[in-house]
Image 1 (tube, rainbow, N blue to C red):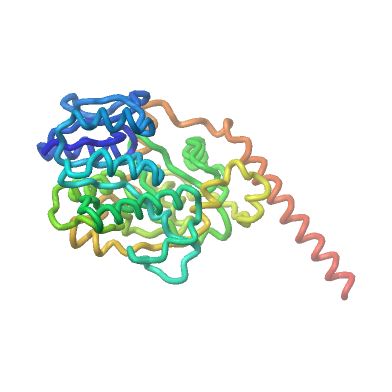
Image 2 (image 1 turned 45 degrees about the vertical axis):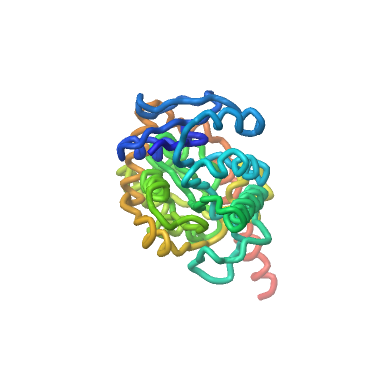
Length: 343
């Protein structure tokens, strides 16, 4: 089968491309040509901007492909362009959506694929949901062969490890050296990172499996962790000391470091568990790489490429920790004084 990946050099895309080649498929990647391609030499490339719709549609019309995996469709306009480009010409179109299409906080867990998707938590999720709507309408009206996959947090070699304050790799140095790590709230909200190779396998299966058109599937992790467990798992994977976790209220973090807490605002603060049973049955999706194994592999890649920043590059965390501990001490002293006055 000849498979076109629209956006083939990102974290998940790289895993999909490699697995498609390993499965014997011919692969062409449509990219901007701005990122290093860590894919097999047999992969062909076409360069362009998929948001230059006329040019994009002209370029892909010259390709004789059987299936498309679209990793960089972010808006309903992108979706409409893809429908124009591929209607009647491909047997399968796999759209990489996101669990961010769902409204949060959620009223019950685990979430199934028919969970209400509005109001959206973020503009990113809103646009992805509207893109899904365009694809499902095209399927219902004209048989457009779309399959929608909704991943959650995906990590792996070529990426980094996220944390409350973003994705700076100095976090890894902090864990290794036993330095304090900021955690939002009390650290008991639930998160579930899935290694990109497990997620990629579901995309390859969606290309190859019959009868999955017009459906949406969760392709998320099965190992659900509190954020405290998340950091403790990183420490074990790196043979580091038990991490010193400094818990700071989420709303305080929003006020103090708004630029570092975009991910916390839209994602990390919410507990969510997703039901993968539909993808498990139809696509064979499963988590085979544990959190600690995935951490070992990801950090080994970062070490190999000299991309782990030292603790000294992360002054924000040190300032937050110092200020928060001082504030707690001051609060305790003030409360004790008030108690004495009452007595």
